[in-house]
Image (cartoon, rainbow, N blue to C red; front, side):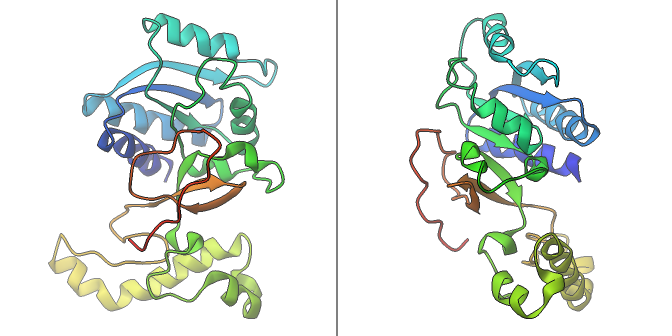
Length: 231
C-alpha cells in the first residue's frame, strides 16, 4: 500500500541519519497517500520536513520553488529528497535538481515512480532508490529466476510478474501459516519481500532497477553502484 511505502521510505532515511528532508510530490491520490504516511512517520521519529514542493502540469519549471523551499528553511540544503511522483514527473525533476543547487542530495521515492517508466528515458532516474519486490531485482531467496520463468510461462512476464510474485507468496504462506500465527517475530522470505511487510529496495542504474545495497544512500554523482550481495 502507498502508506506502507511512505513509512518504509521515512524509516530508510532515518536509519541513515538523514533527517532534514525536502519533499516533491504531485496532485495524485496515490502520491498523496504515500506522502501523508511519510510525513507522519518522519515527525513521529524526530525527522524534519523542511518544505513540500508540488509539481504542476501547467508549470514544469520548479527550480524557483525548490530554491524558495531551501531558503525558507534557513538556506541549508536538505539531507535527502523524498519523491512521491510518477516516472514522468520524476524525470522532469531530475533535470532540475542541479540548477536548483541540490545535486548530490540522496533521493528516495515510492514505487509510484514506476508508473510511466520508460527504459530509454529512465537513465535520468539513476541514483533514485525505491521499494521493489526482491524477486524482480535478483534477490530470489530460492525462487525461480523471473526471466527464465517468463520464457516458459507468458503470464509471468511484464506486469504479470508482480501478480505471479503475490501468487508465489500466497502459496508459500499456506505452509507457514501456523508458525506465523504462533510466533510474532517469525519471517518468511518471499518474492514480494520478507513477509512482515518489509520491502526490498532497488536503485535505478542505467535506467534499470537493481538491488540497492544496505549501506548509505547513493549520491547522484554519475557513478554506478557496486553489485549488491545476497541479503
